[in-house]
Image (tube, rainbow, N blue to C red):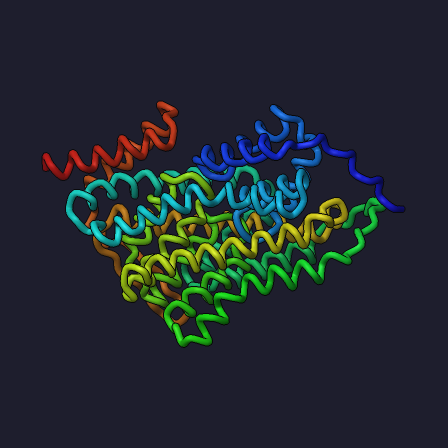
Length: 424
C-alpha cells in the first residue's frame, strides 16, 4: 500500500522564516530539551507551520541519527518548509551564533585561561557543569531504563568504558546489535519506502563537501590539522545520544590518547559550551581550536573552523538523505529496538562521564589502577578540594532547590569561585 501524501504545509514567507529561525538560534540555550521546546513553540504552536505528529515523528528520526538532534530537527523543519535551501538556512542559524561566541571564548581561553582569576571563575563553572551532567543522567535514565534488560545494557556500557576503556563506537554498535536481535516481533504497518532517486545525488554532493577540506589538508601535508579533521569526522559518525554521551569517548581520546588537552581544559571547554547558544557539541570547536594552537593564532582559528565543518556538514547529509524515509522507518520494529538499546547504553556512558567529571573537579590528584585490560581512575581522598565541594553544593541548591535558570547559576557560582579565591 502506498502511503497517503503528506498534508500540504502552510506557506512560510521568507522574511518570517528567516526571523523565526534566527530567533531559535539566538535563544537555543539550556541543552536539547530546551532547544526543542523553543522550536516547537515557534514552528508548531505560534505559526502552525508543522503539525504535532509531524514534529514528533521528525524528532524521533533525529534521535536515531548521530549528531546533535536539536540542530538536525531545525534542519528538518527548514527542509519541510522551504526545501534544501531552507534546511541549510535553518541549520546554519541554529549553529552560527554559538559558534561565533565559542570562537571568541576559545581564543580568550588560550590567551588567558591559566591566570589565577580565570581559573577561580572556571572552578565554579566546572562545579555547575558536573551537576548538569548528573541531572542529564537522572532524566535520561528515568525514560530509558524501564526494563531489566535496559538496566543491564546501561551497567555493561558503564563498565566497558569506565573500567576497560572500550571505544564508544564499539559500545554503540554492540548495543544496536543486541537491540535489533532482541526486538519483540510486531505487526508491520503497510508503508512503502519512498523512491530514492535523490539519494545518490545527496550523498555525492554532501559527501564531497565533507571530504573536501580533508583532501586539501592531505595534499598540502598539514598533518596535525588532518589528524584533527579525521578525528572529528569519525566522531560525527558515532555521536549517538547527543553531546553528553560522546564526551566520555572524546575526552578519553583528546586527553589520554592524543594529548591535545588536559583534563582541566576539557572541563573548561564544556563549561564554555554551556554558556553559549546552540548545541552543546560546540565543545568540539573549543577542542579543535586548542588542539591546533601549536600552529599559532591562525592555526587555532583554522582548527576551530575545520572542526565545525566536519562536525556539522554530516548533519546536513543525514537529514537531506534520510528525511523522506521518516514514515517508513517508524514502522520497522528492529530499528526501533536498536534505538532503544542505544539509548540505554548511552545512560551508562553518561554515568561514566559523570564519574570522570566529579573525579577531576573534586580531587586535585587521582591514581590509576591497571591490571591486564582493567584501567580504572580513582581519587586520592587527601586531595579533596573543599572549595570545589562547597561550590558544587551551592550549584545544587540554586539548580534543584531554588529552580534558578542555567545561565543564572553559572554566573553566580563562577562569581562565588572568584570570591573564594580573593578571600581565602
